[in-house]
Image (cartoon, rainbow, N blue to C red; front, side, top):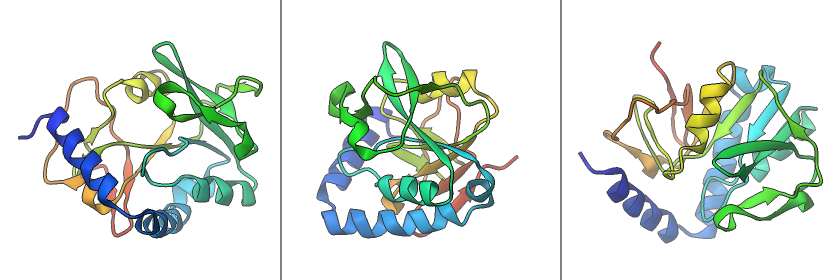
Length: 186
């Protein structure tokens, strides 16, 4: 099995090779699939990441959440943790940790125990295992917030036959690509 480091290198190269038009089209398709999920429809609150560097564009999902009257929050890295800030306007985003868009600190932090989390990831497999970016931020956050429903969004090329896992990994319950939806076996 490939190492996480090798997987990251391969997937980053594949993402970089995608055109902006492909990323936008696929992200819109993913948004349609996510917003059709019962988990999205019933959620009153959404925790979403701000996309960066050819990740699935979350702007469309966030806009759909706002249109549906849902509250939205996005993360900011503080030390070794993520803190979520209520998000009402894209103007709140500034380059933060490693240049990733994060909310400025003028907003209100939230501690939602019940919400739908939209997770990023580098690679996944059909068993809903996830390779993240290596910081462990989502695993640490989710370890403390066990009631959150977890949906990962990814492009189809990010789904691999198998990815390595560790005991501390917390997997998404659902993975949505532009082509398929995978549910964690219970």
